[in-house]
Amino acid sequence: MRFGLLIMAVFFDLFGLKQSEFKYDENGHILFYEVIESELSHAQLIDNAQKLMLPSKKMSNNRNGHFEKASSIRLYRKSLGKSPHGELDFSIMLEVKDNRYRYIIKDFVFYPMKRNRYGKFERIKHKASLLKEKVAEPDKLWTQHKNTILTKVDKVIENIKREMAVIKHEESKPEGIKINDDW
Image (cartoon, rainbow, N blue to C red; front, side, top):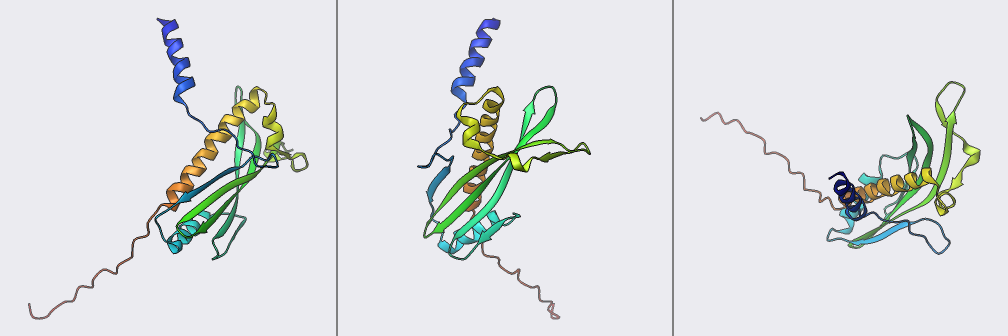
């Protein structure tokens, strides 16, 4: 009975999870890219992109339809406790044209973390490395990180698609109630 459950668990684990893989550009850098057709107007897509890319420290945008945003993911060691291993910085680029938009997620840089003299974790800035170097020949820790990164980037992509598909409804003013003295 236990052996049957073990076999079922392995098959569900292998075939149940469909996860994306890293894609590389012509220079060998990790890149996530897709062009999405939309029925929304150009102005609506621009508004959705501005709302999506708004909460950011480093952001640049213009009315031509080009938006950039810096983002990061914290990666943890999963041993006895949960301690941060490092932070992965990346940039999200969103470009809008007539009835379509594209997202480009690129520039993955890993910053390891260590405790400072006050016991808080902080980045080691001079030891930054590209993600492609870390996942080229991953060990056990980086195999876990690779799965975490792919899961979190998939969530970012789903969020981009969901927010860009929002249709803005016209805000109508509620009709004022006029008090009539002839009641």
